[in-house]
Image (cartoon, rainbow, N blue to C red):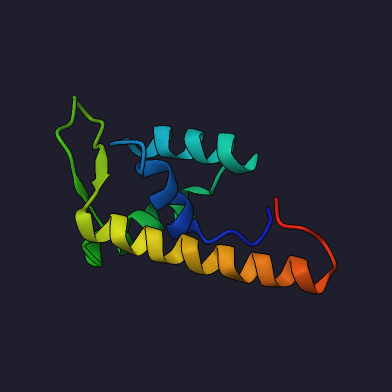
Length: 99
């Protein structure tokens, strides 16, 4: 797997709405082509909840969906804008156009 940050990936896929663990990992796989290991996924969920970037949503049965908090949405936007700035600068240094 490329050097993707598990927490950023989780926040990205939750931007579309609440999901539970398996659905989060499926969405991540669709996004980057690989799944997170259970330790990486559930570790990221625990850290994000501790930072109040995600919170439990109404669940069904054993599934425990989580959703972005307003703070989580703000942090995700800041992270993505910073990543985009770095990507543009790096591509420019390589003589390539950002797509």
